[in-house]
Image (tube, rainbow, N blue to C red):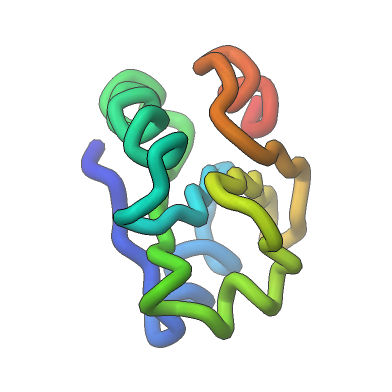
Length: 102
């Protein structure tokens, strides 16, 4: 499944109302560690059918970053049933991200 780009307009529907766990990647185009994690995020989206994978560009969606207290990027937040289920900050191994959404 493809990575879904999130905005303030589609966040509620795509994340809060999702029927499966959602992994959200808060990133910026200029961020080195974010670029490093991009292929890992794409891999998870392609391999894990039971997980929805989304990205939020914090430069374009500052309000969402503030709403979830994102102070450093990349920040990964897992949502289950509209609730925050876990949070991981920084470039991490793929299995650390998978553990957030399992």
